[in-house]
Image (cartoon, rainbow, N blue to C red):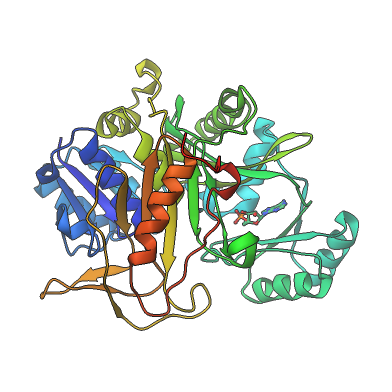
Length: 421
Ligand code: AMP
Ligand code: GLY
């Protein structure tokens, strides 16, 4: 099977590593545009991943059997629609179905129609409506911009003035605002493969969204993750499948916008049960690094079956009993300010315990690796216990030298058994 992966992040590097680990030959994988780490494993091509006609032309010319779309931008640009119209199997939803991620009000409508448990919310188009909704729900306040806001659209705060200022910023940009009830509990990311009618679950993971230890500092794209989650109640995955994923996919099919790709369910486990806080229409980053690290079933077959409507007759994917953690190395100033390009040294050789998924890196002609700012790379480690996985990951990340860089030291700390066996 000839595969084209679209994207340039650690998520795409993790997808490519999982394809190779589960049996796809590296020479059958191409990536557009890729990054410094990906280019060391497969062919990277200078193609704009968000240009529907350029991607379709390349995929046709190179007899591509499957296109895997990593980030959201190509989905929003209609790349999967163009590929599908040309008869090329694509793992990634249509522009219309991807609105499940891009429009929070659309997601709420779908959930209401499908009876999916989520937080109560009020849609507002003026600051006085926002203020009334804040007063009605009470503190802590949750304010969400209803549109793509590059991960900066949500604020959770007990400061009413800050909540109002956040809402005003996005109202000024012409967006609607969603004020939501605050939900207390652990967050879980659970991914489902969907072929438009049937779904198959992957293994649950937890993401660490705040920049600094102890969940302090600003929200980020994600600073680390671990999988599985030993504290989840029995039957959790089956419950999310029955109450969230399947009804959502069925409702989208009923609306004439079937969802073919990765349904990312962002959940909070409250004392009253599960609640959806967001859907994404793509693999999560950095959760993918730990979920796919543990995958045993060939990934190419799973994604091809999803892309071609064959999940009903496909067995559930299998996962290693070993655990995986990932720690993200971010550049100086992330997520607030951009750092200049800087050389990275001390990158360890990968072994059976540790892999490095690159994000914002480039490979120079002289073989040096440069960080280009943002989330630079993910150190991914797998072991029998969280204690060992943490030890391996932190030993590797401590030796990586990048001026000004930072990482969290508490990833998976609460599930660290504190001993080796
Ligand atoms: P989102 O972009 O919707 O995932 O929101 C970003 C982060 O805000 C989430 O990962 C949660 O930590 C937090 N959050 C979102 N909605 C709520 C809510 N209703 N109650 C509590 N925290 C929330
Ligand atoms: N890790 C969160 C996301 O991918 O949206």
